[in-house]
Length: 361
Length: 128
Image (cartoon, rainbow over the protein chains, first blue to last red):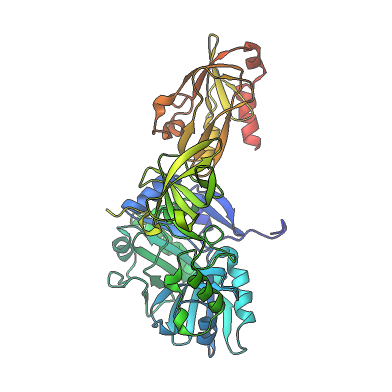
């Protein structure tokens, strides 16, 4: 990004400044990285309730005749089978089966969809969709007109119900509630491994929502805690675990790829990759101590490099370093013990399935 | 504002020195711990190790970043604060007290004179 290009501010920017957040530039946005601190914020989400400004995420509306055909071809999950009022996690793939982005698609109505994509990929996703759309499909970037907050934690649903007048406890996972008289959408999704909602609201309604959640006891949480929580829960992040050179097979994301649904971008390559079995697998790693795995660290057995760390954090739940890594298939089994090269030292890490990174109490 | 106590000397790499006779107690500054954020891991040198001024003698790791610990003075490590153990947040909470890192017996005491005064260090971090 050029120096002359202005850094974007979310509709909640003034609130972050009021709270003395430490701000950082992220994907072209001036975002809060922390308020009280990464670890206390992450702990608040695991034990009670945290609220995140995620308005930097890209929000694209795709509607009209041909919208379903476009999304069916461009993404891997079964968008035709997605009921109105529901959302699903899916992948935007290129013709080689590489991952352009991972995203959540909401089906607002029959031929009306909302896509929530990674901030850094919004422009590219928009261009890709437009290039593959028939003329009658309407595609618009509604990011500037809207805000988005995530309310997460074991107390999130109850707290959000009390803070607003939305009837939320009956909303199922990956379903959403839309108040008849307002444009706010409450979706029971998240990126922390906890229960809660991601709330999409008009930009001018964001401050009131934010204040109400804080007044009812939600802890403001920044991008630092968000990254700690998602890595601790084993969720991939674009640019770390997945990118255009990774396939859904090695990334362990075949649960959102419906090979049988009919043609989509990259289907043949993904089918071939699945049949030949990948040489490496994305796994979780748990350290033996407090040292933090960092992206790019080598994993070895003896002197032989067999893997590379893609993300790592200090896990407040485990009180030790944990993260994710691509590891050669023969060492990718849960329980496999590898040695992580950290500066001059070697630290023992144990492979776990990504879904088991976060211990369930 | 972070604190910069009087009576100490400071390095450009954000360590502080407190003289106790011919021994220097060394830690990282309040400014440094605030910039690093929650500290989760420390690598401290073994007792007996000889280190030179400006040499990296250990590592401090926070949730955000890994940084070298750079010695403001030359000498021999006579004690490392291994008592911190897993309570690495001690360095965040009390960087000039219980969060000290090493004690070094000085081999070139004149080096201390060349370090920054509290006023000079406070001016440096306020300009950054």
